[in-house]
Amino acid sequence: MSRATTVNEDKIYRAGSTGKKLAVIISLVLAFIVLAYVVFASLFPAAIRITPEKGERDVPVDSKIKISPSWLRGTITAVSVKEISLDAVGNSQETRTVDGHMDGDEFVPSDGSQTLKTDSRYEVTVSADLIDLTFTGPRHRTSTETYEFQTITTPAPLFMRETQVVAMGEPIIIEFNTPIEVFQYEIAPALATEMHIDEENPTRAFINFSDYQQGQKYQLTITGAVGQNGVGIKQPYSQTITTTEPLRIVFVPGDSEAGVSLSERPTLNFSENIRNPEVAESLVSMEPSVLGGWDWLDERTLEFRPLNDWTQGAQVTIRLKGGLDGLRGESGSYLREDVESSFTTKPSKLIDVDLTAQKVLLYDNDQLVKTLICSSGSKATPSLTGRYAIYAKAEKVDMRGEGYFAPDVPWVLMFNGDYTIHGNYWSTNFGTPTSHGCVGLPINDAEWLYDWAPIGTIVSIHY
Image (cartoon, rainbow, N blue to C red; front, side, top):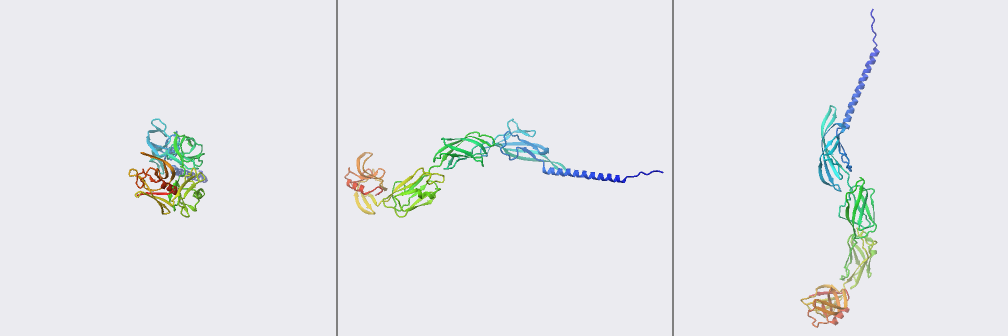
């Protein structure tokens, strides 16, 4: 009788279960690998990799241009390098193509020179055959990219103008094209100064005057500077520095002006806008004192408005205090010293010279008080016509000119340079124009007129 083999069904079940588990694990591993492949391909696509990096600045000139495909997924097929030299403010100057080739992952100039130069921008154009990872396998892709970077900037002051005008209380300002650590300078003629670099903006430096003087000119030379990049300037740089011109003033009426209208409103006209107009009334005075007030017509014109008309024939002097505590222009300028100006108002008296009638008519408050006979300039040397004012008087004057000399001419009233009204002791032909241009009178009449007419008296000469 044969024996039947017993089958262990439990073992067979366990073996089948283990196989299923192993298959599941293998499937999960494969799925993870596929997922990792997809994530890696999306997070790290094939690309051109270059150093220095795109847009980098202040690249040291001993750096190398290195180019390669990322993750070794591809091949570099072409490289071109352009070098653009830059001026101190970063403007493009000359452009050249750097002849060279790739040695491994490094670009090497064909002439063996250093690849990079200071103060230059580089444009590197790279073509590559890249390999992208896809679900269906590797896929080739052609890519061309241009990268720009800039090498270290050599420090240089940005003197945009030939001359820098420095106002009172302000420093000389020097702008550099790159942050600096230190700089040296000279000023001629020698001047006591101190300097510092702006901590918040190290591209800017300040030089302060210890003894500011208006209307001065200096030559500033930057003799040395070292940037925060460790590079020094290539050469000295110079600029003219001027301090502001002193504040100037024009008086209207002008100094020594005579015959000023009795309704005149004197003005002080300044060379620039005044930044402290509120102190004007404490600085300006008038002699003799006149009732009225000072008003600013605009930012540089101060006017006096008298309460009443001026006194006839009065001499008025206006004084203005100068100095640092005085009026200040917008630029910080000021009057170096006190200034004054005088004028004489229209007098009540008038000397009217009628050249046609050869007569001198004297008026006081528009009333004729006396008529004198005269001898004016001849046809060859005519008298002046116009309206003048007596500016000086002399009891005796020696007179000389071309072809004549008259000593001790008496009772002289001067109204325009050498032109005068005077006593004439050498002539008896009054009523006829025979003089060298002056108005001659008989001696007694000349003396009377001399005593009657004060300085400032109007002289009107006409035909």
